[in-house]
Amino acid sequence: MTLALSIAEIRQAATTIAPHVCRTPLRVSSGLSQYNGAEVLLKLETMQNTGAFKLRGATNKLLSLDDAERSAGVIAVSTGNHGRGVAFAAAKLGLHAVVCMSELVPTVKVEAIRALGAEMVITGKSQDEAEETALAMIAELGLVYVSPFDDRHVIAGQGTIGLELMAAVPALDTIIVPVSGGGLIGGISVAAKALRPDVRIVGVTMDRGAAMYESIKAGKPVQVEEMVSLADSLGGGIGSNNRYTFDLVHALVDDMVLVTEAQIADAMAWLYWNERIVAEGAGAVGVAALLNGFAGGGRTVAIVSGCNVDMADFTEIVRERAP
Image 1 (tube, rainbow, N blue to C red):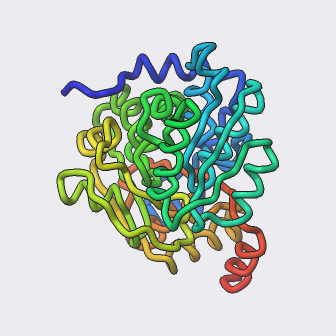
Image 2: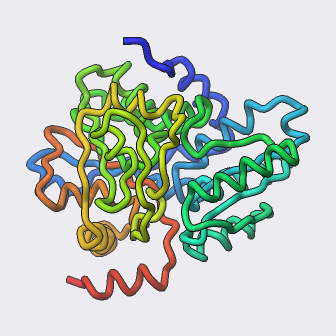
């Protein structure tokens, strides 16, 4: 099988981004291990510098730009965490950054990106509509597009998580990964399966507006209606002209699981009360699957992908579900 991305590219990304990102903690969850009947570990991308894994890919992409591209500035379309990663990396590198977001993105994420100095453009009812605005600005202003997922440098950056997992737990059986556009699960799958071909990769997403899930089921990229969800970071389409992530997910991911809004909320509360972890909805979907009948199978890692949640909303969710 010939893949669009190699482990060599991911190893290069790990070297490139090492001075700029955290090697995040990996810790055992005794409660989830009891549920699973085998050891379950949590990979805490909540502890990344921007509170989410997206900083890895954004940093790798920006560091790949030549002088002319850096001078032009960059533009991103985001449901929140990618924009934050791009804004953070751009500020560190002295680049001008524009972030386009739809009206569905929570205010807390918009304000966090604005605080990093990026120019904000709020437009449209979906990520796809926000992307239309970004493409128009690229044509007009010559900005460099930083895809949230469908870019080799971005995917390679996210794949560095896979390298960290396999170095820490070589005998890993299952990796559970939140799925949106496929950059995270695609990169992790390339790295993990290159090092341990029989490792099982499982994608988890919300049951409303799950673009990659529906695309894999259809056998080609399809559009879905983007809906409000606790897992807002997983919203948006995968692009009708998807170049990389659809093929990577189709080739390498062994299973896809859907979770409900109630299950996501319960998982957020479970992580808080049992593990003292603040996770946004998208970050909790893997735990939601494990708490609701999905058996990881052997030694399992669940990626807790981010913590960028409105704390007033989060507090209400966990209080309602206090033990």
